[in-house]
Amino acid sequence: MSSIKHVINALNGINKKGKLLSKEDVILILEATKEVSIHKKIINSLIFLFTTINKNSHLKKLTNREQQILYLIGNGLKTSEIAIQLKRSSSTIETHRKNIRKKLNLVGKGKLIEYAILNNLQQNKL
Image (cartoon, rainbow, N blue to C red; front, side, top):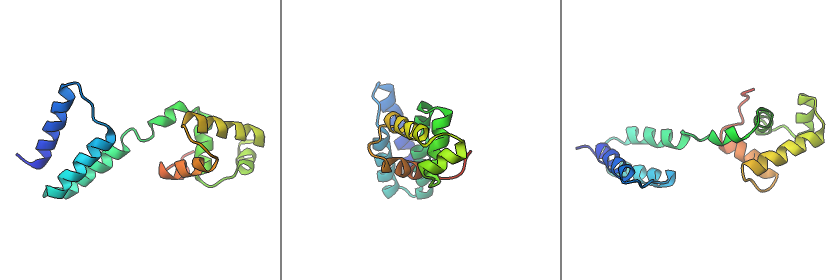
């Protein structure tokens, strides 16, 4: 049996016993399997897919306007620039920024831009 099938069977066995692995555990297992497998490209693809699945599910917590503002932040716009573009006051945008940070458990203003970039939200998806 190939190493990929061993990993899949092991993961299925754990799941059937009612135990759940964290995303980090699965990535570690895949990374370790990659080291001994001849199917490195396939495992790299699995790792990529696993790390991107549900990556942006946290965005469902945000309103459409908050998502829009987060994308604009990711594009490097400042509060005043976002306010002008969306025809809102700067204080309204600041309130949205505060609410986004709260919903995403981010501490500090700089974390919004960091979060947007790390989650590939810097592209203009409006």
